[in-house]
Length: 171
Image (cartoon, rainbow, N blue to C red; front, side):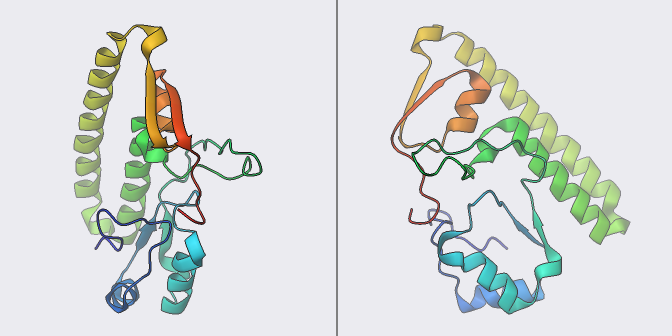
């Protein structure tokens, strides 16, 4: 069950009653962390109200965070770590580990699926590096509306330019 619908801002999501019910029934609740779900404290309230504090797991554990660069926000972590494929692999490894702990009789299945998924991600990473290598270094600039692609840019040696920084509280 994916709580935040595609195209909806997870920074400012407003949980629906069926979200609360789904969390209450869940054996595990995975969340990104790194300030992604912090807007108005919606995620923490949902977990507390559902009494699921012991069943939550932050999938970004083990990722080296990049911090926001906007003045006054330098201590805040950029939540978009999955945009670096190697971080995506860390996310998948974390999920497999937690699923295997919670459901040990299917551990081999989770490990097999993890290997297949990480193999695909590694292939995608190799292809991206090869394509980006065809761009002259001085032209490797990624321009977006907000500063959400720092992890991606760092992984591929791109200069990230954007109109505004991420605001994890009011996006």
